[in-house]
Every structure is written in structure tokens, then in C-alpha cells.
Length: 425
Image (tube, rainbow, N blue to C red; front, side, top):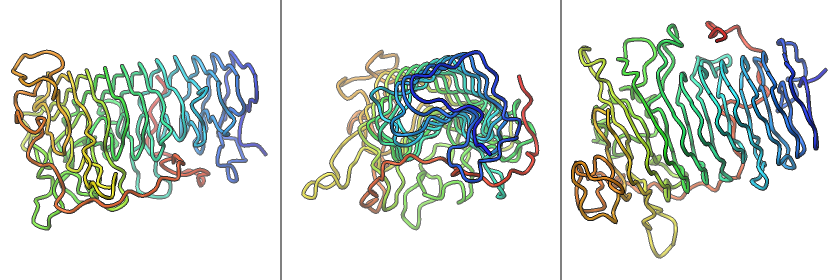
């Protein structure tokens, strides 16, 4: 009884193989790391591999604290529950690298950064259609991180066609996310799946010390809420359980900080939860990106939405617990030279962050370091809008255990047959 097709150790070489789980692996019931290809140890080279057909595990699982310096090139992962997993405990020196691959038709998250890893020049597409197991269906995403403070590199990838978000980061730190394209356009891929939902194409939630530069972020689904495949922030408490889009005052109108209220589609969202235990959203750099969020193709709808290139919530840019004697230390995320051409509204800037503050005047048409829509925002206060903080302090952040998490823990129960599975390309 085994929970993998192939497992490699130190200084191994694997190339030009098709690894098919055929839904026939039987050891997954006891194994947290069940996968088609299990990578342990260091210094291995994997090239030109196809890993597929395992609906209760991963296509490729890189695990074990000693696993380092493994290089996976031109690997095609498809038709699994998870795609590629970098397990918690993986370190940076030297890191494990996945490049020039294709990850597609994954039920939950296509790539998970539990520990350090590097994802380069790959295509991640058409995934996240069903993370649920014996629960109501829930969307997954393209790239997912939760609780990983070690970091990682996400560079020159193309991520599109997700049921959920293209990049979903929650309480993470120390990432370099550069020169990628994140594109939300799901209707053609999941025409029957009304559960697909993402309030933003990319979200950095309770995330710090991360570089986000030279990326293209597009949210052009623009689907009204009573149709299939919505990507809007919905007017229901279940879709904003942490009240990140309004103040916490009892009289605050839900979604009041969003230009389109509950009908807002967002490119990039930089957020902080207004609750005790939330990590500070501080010290990020957002530079030279192009954010495009638009509902213009739905302008004739009965309830049209509003696209916002990037949205920044209250409570960001401030570290309430950095120093006992210095409450609310300013630790802003710095925004420079970002473009919003094609968005209905360029940006909404709550919190206390920094927008090309070294440039005293940013007029319409000003180039770098100005952000394209700086002229539409207040000249004072580093060009933040007038929605800095939540009425109540967020409180002390929870101490992270350093263990990056999967969205749904493994091992999984036996799967039900999916309602609809995307056909191979």
C-alpha cells in the first residue's frame, strides 16, 4: 500500500516519464503528503515529467526540512486535488525551484507555499473549481499562502482562469512577486459553477515585508451577482466576515469603503483584518505594476458594478504593537509608479501608507515615481484617502508558529465525484 507513484531522495535524476496515479493510490488515508511525485532530500533534478490523476492528494509534493536545491523543470501537473506543494519547514538556502511547467485542472489550489519555494516562468490555469469535501463547494485559487513567514519567489508566471483568486496570501511575509500576469476571466472555463467567487484577482491579507513589482493584474469578469461566476464583493456578511471593507463602528454601512459598495470588482487588495490576532499589513513595496479592473462590458446591466484597480483597507501601514511606548508605529506599504489605465476607478486608499511621497507634485500624466492616479487623491498625508483606521484598535497579533498551512488539510476523505470537471486542453 503506497501513497505515491515515485519518491526521490538525494541527488536523484528523473526525466521523460508519465506518472499516472489512475485514482489507485491507497496509502493516502494515513499520509499527510500523499502525491504522485514525492520529493525528499536535496540536489535532485526532475525534467519533462507528467503527473496526473490523484483527486485526494497532490501532483508534486516537496517535503522534509532537509529537502533543498531540487530543480523541477518542464513538469506538467494536472487532474489532482492539489497541484504543487512546498511544505512548511523548507528553507531558502538553497531553495527548491519549479520552472517552465504547466499546472492545470486542479480541484483546489494549484500551488501552495507552506514553506520556502520558487515558482518561475510557469503557466497556472483553469483550477480551483472545488476545494470542498463533504461540505458545500468552495473555490480554490492559483497560488495560495497562509502563515508562511519564510517567504518565496513567484516570478514571470502566467496565472489565469481560476475559480477563486489568482494569488491568495494570508498572514505571509518575505515574498518576491515579480513580473507575473494574474488574469481573472472564468466564465468560459466554469460555465456551470456559480460557486466560483473572488473579491479580487490578487489579495495580500495581513501580509508584510513583501515585494510586489512589475506585475499585470486584471479583473475583467464584471459579472453581475445573479449570474454565474461572480467576482464581486457580495452584499452578504458571509463574504466579508471580518468587515475589511468598512469601519467596525456599529453604525457603519457594510462595504462603505468600496467605491461600488457591494458591487465592486478589485484587481489588487491590500488588507488587514480588524480583529485581535491579525498580523500587521506593513512594509510591503508595490511598484511598477499595471492594475486593470473594469465592469464596462456590463454597463448595461440592471445593477452594474465598479472596477477598482487596487484597494487598500483601513489599518494597513500601522503596527500597533511594535513598541510598548510608541503605539501605532508608522510602517507603510510604499506604492510607486503603478498604472491603472483601463480601470473604472484607479484606486481607493484607506490606511496609512505611502504613495510616491518623495515627489511633492504628481499631476495627471506625471511619470515615475508618481502612481498614475495620484492626482486624484489628497496631496497631503502621503496621498492617503480619509479612511485611515478602524474605530477600534485591531489588537495584538497572534504569534505565528511558522507553519504554512494548506487550505484543506491532508489526508482527505474519499472524494465525491465532481459535478463538472474541466476537460483537458
